[in-house]
Length: 169
Image (cartoon, rainbow, N blue to C red; front, side):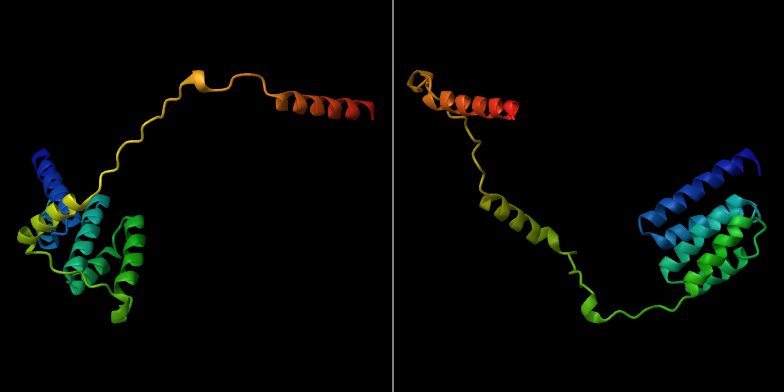
């Protein structure tokens, strides 16, 4: 591989991964297939690209291509790649579970929200009540009774008698 193809490979590989992460699986497949052609299929990196490609195939609903590529990776010379491929193959080939309809939540189509969203946004903004900030109430200290309280002396006396009685015993 020349340095130009390494740069080209990295660009295709990263673009394919990014497209996958954004849910653009068809575009991801295209870039990852191009990246596969620019790297040795028997290298660890070649196996890594193919794992991304398998996931993109599966996400796009092309399970047969995903299974075929995964079976190919089961004979890969890199041990870790081979082990991961066998594990992934068992997952892909596992029977799909049928979920009862009552377990599913239907997501409404919000494609025509440009007209209605502004109406709801304005209405909800005007209906919000803004809580006023709490203000600290200032107290005039001249009105507070600051003379000694007899209760303090009584409680100190009782506490001291208890301490003395504990020391005597």
